[in-house]
Image 1 (cartoon, helix red, strand yellow):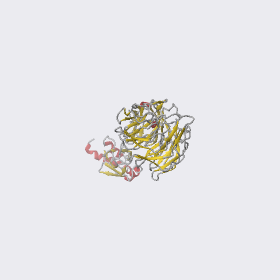
Image 2 (cartoon, helix red, strand yellow):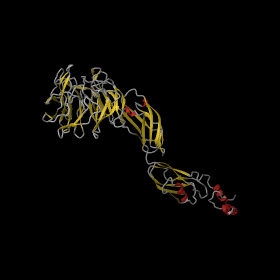
Image 3 (cartoon, helix red, strand yellow):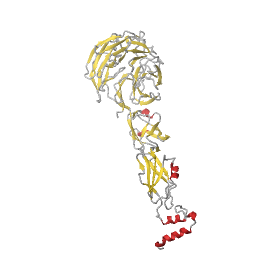
Image 4 (cartoon, helix red, strand yellow):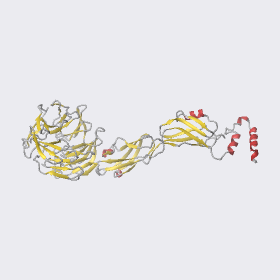
Length: 585
């Protein structure tokens, strides 16, 4: 056909069509069909002229189309999209562009603009009338909820992990595990709690409780903008590692730390002192022959370097010692200080907030031969002034004579004195307070059960854990003094009896129980380590096994949260070994 006469033919065809079909923008009209047939073979489409993926809030989208646009029904388009967008409007820009404006989108995700009424000037409908836009203001990060990055094996006790995402996820698949502990963990299933929280169930098969690490990655997780999770989580788990060997076995003693983090082991059935300097691997025997003290001495750090030792009992002696000594842990000098008003052993000792030291109760004399076994238990206390190096007996007497008790200074400055006995087979169920301001004693709350030869641990929250009683009517109760409520309650029962055990507070607020005998004066201490999940479930969990059965030992806590347990008795023999419980790998 000759192109020069085409307009006339088109006009002629148009004149032959009835008037109700003469809308050239109506795709059903014959004219519209003819116009479409002579247009480009490409489909009618509009593509975004701005970014299809926005890192930040967006409030408009500009679409450029490959045809001229017919008149827009903007009201219809706005109604069509009002459920997805707020204050949305549509504007034709020039002949072939469509500007869509709305209130900014703040929530990440995939959104769709409905363009069902948009047609070209030739009457064509869009090949893609649901146009997607992606809003992506951040990349998803996953965290492990309710657990510390440095934790222990009770991390696995509940048999699931809870994960939280920084934004809603489109998909959360099975995490990948790596690290020294990964082979001992099998993931079983995943529960979706909501779009941002997921629970992963697993099984464990640990062959030891040595320190290790676990790295959790999330390659199978992505957000609603189809971004992959960017982070992984590495957890270091604390456990047991053999430590250096003591020069002498020690039992019923307390180890100390100075300001440098050095560990001092002194006395405890051996009249000597040795030090493990921080960062070294061996104990140094600093004082092989100290003044004889067989057992029952008590000590406290006066300051960052000076250790104060009081009382005790010589072997085969019937009367306790009144002497006190100062051991300089840096120079290792050992000098006698003042003498107590009363000789004492198996007494309590605490450092008061004013820097002075209080010695409490204890045994004055001792007859160890049956049937005449007896103690003279004291109901007096004394104050030591480290500047004058003198002792002054407190005028007021204690509410009850006490030996084999434990005492701790509360956050308000009062001294809390717990249990004890004034006869070896007569543990007490009473407590009392000493107020340094009034220099007076008063009754405290009663204990659920009578206890003696026990230990006290002041926790981070200021409450006091009472445990390890040697004389407790064969109970394995662990008690707690709630300061705010002024009462003592049984917080939990350990799985095993733990007389002469050692408890220290873990970085996550739980309490680790290490060693302890099954029953009074036996050689059957427990190797099983337990954790009290304090303040959470308040239940005990098994934490693995120590290398040896141990009781009557001691322990210290380093600034990084690592513990060192040392000495004690095993099978009736003095133990020279030590064990770290921490992050040392």
